[in-house]
Length: 66
Image (cartoon, rainbow, N blue to C red; front, top):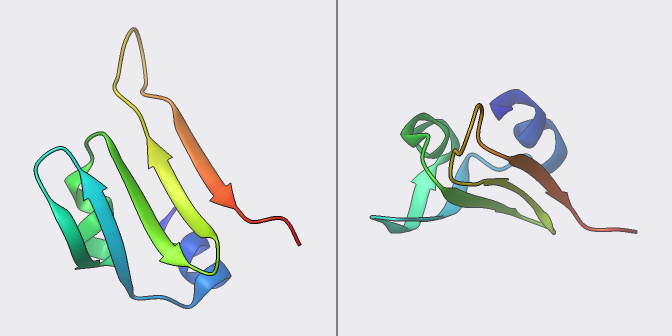
């Protein structure tokens, strides 16, 4: 996921919105936290990870349409 987000956005500094922190982080740091979050890379590119229920948590790539 880190590699794919970086290839799409070329962003190493992202905006992280999670349960206990909202602000700028390096992409690697944001991906390591691994809780309910949105990682926004800019240019309409991001990642969402929801709360786990039964099994793996829902995960979605957020990509702006061109």
